[in-house]
Amino acid sequence: MSRGTNDTNGGSGADAGLRAGATGIVNALIDAGHEAYFAGGCVRDRLLGIEPEDYDVATSGTPSDILRVFPRAQGVGQSFGVMLVRSAGRMYEVATFRADGGYSDGRHPDRVTFSDARHDAERRDFTINGLFENPVTGEIIDFVGGRRDIEARVIRAIGEAEARLREDQLRMLRAVRFAARFAFELEESTADAIRRGTDQLRGVSRERVGQEVKRMMVHPNRAVAAWTIQYLGLDEQVLLEAHHAAAPTRLSRLADDAPYPTALAAWMLDRKGGSAVDDQQRARQWGRSLVLSNAELEAVERCIHVHQVLKSSWPELGVARQKRLVATSEFEQALAVLLTENRSAFIQVRRQVADLIRTGLQPPPLINGNDLAGMGLAAGPTFGRVLEAVYDAQLEGTVADREQAMRLARYLIETRLSE
Image 1 (cartoon, rainbow, N blue to C red):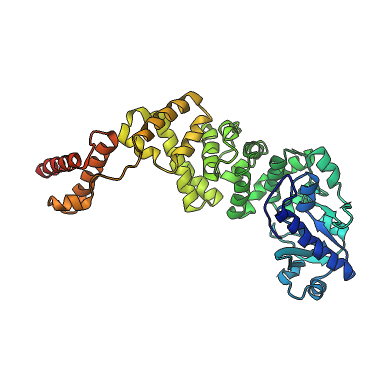
Image 2 (image 1 turned 60 degrees about the vertical axis):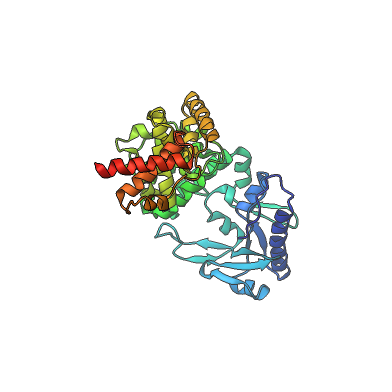
């Protein structure tokens, strides 16, 4: 698999080079007497008018055949017939046509038999991903009805839906992701198979579940994905909390480029009525369910906290605390969530923020620890409290210069030491 710059309008030099490198591999395999095509997502995307981000090649050649054509090829899954081949400065996955045996672990086939293009297409997940393309002639090879379903804008499992989903239970979430990403409908028997098989997600690693959810939540159609997860009853296994069918209204109103933690915070608030657990505890629970990184979990927790402050106690904070809050990295994300539910409150806070910015959010402190030490104050709890109090006064505008700051510090030291 080789990646390039995504350009849905097509025609960028980088993307042309990406396709050309893959075409070179296909031509070399054909010249050596093997059948070879582009396979899967790159074919689907081109038919949808989307410039592919990667190109995979499928061939009748076995790994040893591929090595004869490309002596420097690397085996990354030779038992599955997958090799890495460099072409035009990029690496591509080249896989032998295969038919898969059973999937006793719910992820990998127990055995693989090298086969032909038809069997290779039939062992794939959804019809839209079971297409091949001859890059030389432009011919689309379709054994599974994928082109028909692309035109009908439908996500359909190849063959018998329940059997296909049992092979790899994560396909239930992949179906949701594809449907949301492309604004396709889930074909009825595929959707029904997902509803009946939701409990099977318990056998999927939390890391894989989290990766699928992240890919959905960073896409502009994230709310469609969230709604579909809930509609199909997958949310209980995905989030490890009670099923809740709340409409993801906040999630749907976020900007297209909203970060992953912000999207999770919005979705969590949309589902709030379905949980009696407090927000911070739920954030930690989602962190475990989706295997969030420490940074992602902290961003979700902070976004939820700041959002709550904006809704409940923002006017009473005072200038200093407001400025401190505005200066945090999560403030803008919490404000974005507020916009999705209360535009007038958002406008009011935004106007206040503009006033706070004019007077300086994070000016350099007028005094520091050396100044307090020079006044004879020893390191300890009082040290930090005095510095914080003086800086708060600076933020509020009651202290305007260094002389005033020093005077306030002396007063605070004398007062606190005499207590």
